[in-house]
Image 1 (cartoon, rainbow, N blue to C red):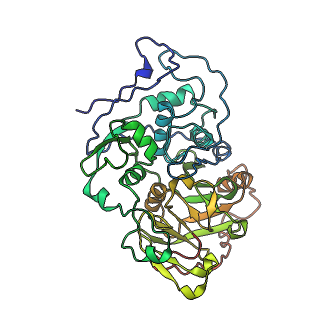
Image 2: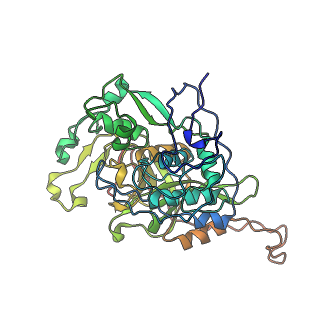
Image 3: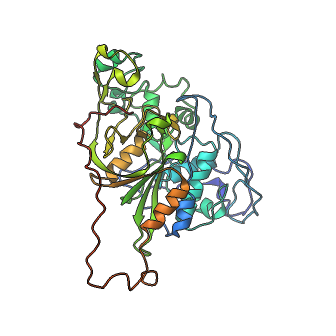
Amino acid sequence: MMKPMLFAALALLTGAVVAEEPFRIVVEDVPETAPAALPPVATAPVAAVSAASAVADPKLTDDEGPVVEDAAPEAGPQEPVANCPHRLRPPAGYDEEVLMLQIFLDRNNFSAGVIDGVWGNGSRKALAAWQAARGAEQTTWIDVPTYAEIATMAEPISRYTITAEDVALVTGPTPPTWAERARMKLMGYDTLGACIAERFHTSERTLRTLNPAIVTWPDDLAEGTVLNVPNVRMAALEKPEHLVIVLEECLLLGYVTDAGTGLPRLCLRFPCSIARQRANRPDKGSLKVVTMAPAPNYTYDPSNYGQDSSVGRMVVPAGPRNPVGSRWIGLSLPSYGIHGSPKPNTVGRPESRGCFRLTNWNVEKLFELVSVGTPVEIVATLQELDALVASMTPETESEADPKAAPETAPAPAEKPTADPAVPAAAGKEPAHA
């Protein structure tokens, strides 16, 4: 029988408030069966849900560069609570309590970005969105109710044995030219460390911290190596009825109709990269999913990069380091789609050529939750998001005008929309990436 995860920070016997080392991670092997579902998500008022939709922007100079994320505002003082000790304000640098929070949010589809154990605006805003979606008070640091949920989270850290399949996904450094990339059979990972980091939604630096026995990283990694990793297993995922992309906040949001209230409820929140150049960003409006490719290749067109078109087009093979990542979700706006990214640490800011980039792990989640025909709304600001969410709210009988139409009046015709774009061939990515 699997032992529960132990946290020294709970101090259940003493009730003492601990300012340092709030967690002691006890690693347990994860069984083949899925863990018990997480506590159910409570409903929340519409206004609270939309108001918390802020950008999660974990910024790094590169996949392993130093963290340059803006520091989150310091939280105000909080009264200690017996039997629930934790830090009273955000820590500086890597911290296990932040790591646990990020794992918790990732499991519940309120991603703060790459799990790195470092507190910043990305984590702060993801936490506030999670609290708002549950109808709770939004705080600038982990409050006691949220801490209590995190402290009882099942198996936040698990053990993973590197497999032959992992090793096969490593193809070495990405070649510098498109011609060399087109000759590859797979756009795989640079190193085995990068492969394992992406599999568990984290960074190589975090894996090194969790595995101090690995002396030379990543050279000491091989098939059969056992590592401590963030446990990103999730409870059953809710399928969003609507997707919303908020351009100025670099966010992709998913909404469902709450069964209890009939109101729209935020069920997922992913950092999303948009076009670096404003001219390449789509206008706000209503789109829908028209095509899906599970392992897309990428067609390089030199004219899209301002290069000599006489070079000709080249097809770059599929793989996690393909320019569009591991999944492609084509939209009804020609040449635009939602896709993965070869650089997870860059997701959540304006840096694409036009499309909407997610981390590979988040686009793989989304790929399983949407289908052809899923509506996708594009808005520019949070104010427009508020108005859109309000428009999803059904009108009550008291709000409806009984004189507006007789009871037998037919439903109004739907507003005509433009013809959807012709789906691209499976695996072929259009111009914008």
